Amino acid sequence: MKRLMLVCVMILTLALSSFLGAQADGPLPLRVFVEQVLAPMALANDYDWRIVQEFSNDELGALIDACEANGILLPEDGYVLRRYRNGESCSEESAISEVCEVFWGDNFWQWRIADRQWLRDVMAGIGYDDWEREEVPGPDDLPEDEARSILFAALHAEFGDDIPFEDPARFSAYFVFEPWEEYDEDSWAWEMECWGNGHRYIARMDRAGQNAYAFEYIERPYARAATPPEAYSLTREEAIRLAAEAIRSETGIDAPLEDPEVYSANAQPLTAASDGLLYWEVMFSSRSKDWGYCMATVEDGSRVVRIKTADVGPITPDNALRRWQNKHGFWGSWTLEIWVQLTEEIAGLPAETPEGRTLAGTKYILPTDDLLPLLRADEIAFRAAGLTRADIYCLVLIDADPHPVWKFCLETVNGTYVQGYTTVEIDAVTGEMLDLATWEYDVDPDYCVYSLHSSWAELMQEE
Image (cartoon, rainbow, N blue to C red; front, side):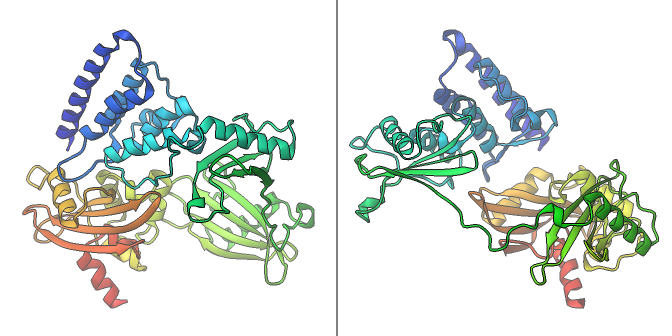
């Protein structure tokens, strides 16, 4: 895998050198730059069997160099530079979109319609064909600039000239062309929505630019208004202290719940829907794997504390996954090395829950030269699943008899919505596909992702 990534980087470097050589006449226009430089970069790292949806950190560095050579300075606090500085990869969608945002702003729906549709076409060309398409005005329709001007005029006519609808620093505008009047003669074709100053304004007109009107959209308030802060007798700090004392008393463990270097403590005032009782919901989120998550409620009047979760004891297989996420983030993105370290920490410890028993019974290992290379296992997994585009939601290498097993969990996404998951188990010596299972929308329970099918199926039968 690393060798192939280096080859991709070499290809990108050669392409970048060629691109720089063509820069004598000045920087390329944005569309040309994206089509001739960034899109080929995204295609260069794809495999024969699947579309790679992320730039590696090295590839991200090449992309940043190409941008700078073309006079494009990405925002220092932006997603691309943050990911690069952290040594992380970055999704191709996010990287290419952020380059366009330098020119057109960070609100996609404020871009010109033709620019939005152009980017959709570019993304479809590199394998992202699930971006929602929209109608584009034809040659017989109003020019977009004229349509915008008419709708802005309608907003000012209704709400006055002192509201700066056109100022992108003050208002976020959403502009679309949807000629529904083809199906309903009373419908509108052009629409603009402007958000700002806590208000939402909408202007609409027909396809010919006639019958423009504007109004303010007002959401219906909730049936029950929020209880004012002065109605509570406890302060946030007092609620946190009471909850912490109750958790320490209940568990007999002197957990440093109020120490800001160890825990992030938060208390939220709430009102019970059933009887209007005022109470506080207190949460303690650990900053390390040495301590776990705690949660309790404190009744505002009686000060009665009810503990919901109190994970303050030592690490066990039952809480290890949650604890380690405090340090390493979501377990699905862990490296093989982190899984091995987890195995070593919980080795020999007793487990009570199904999750803990599964984790305790699974030994994670690192690949060796005599095992099937990860890149070959990747190909087998994607071909077996019948997928060419999916995210690797989780990847582990499990010690098993007679051979270790590569376990993949592939996540398929349509736009922003998860469609489903496919788990694939591959013999890490022979390359044989041992198991394939599909899940719609979600995998439940989680341990089906990071343990062998035979292990969790047996556990489910026992339960």
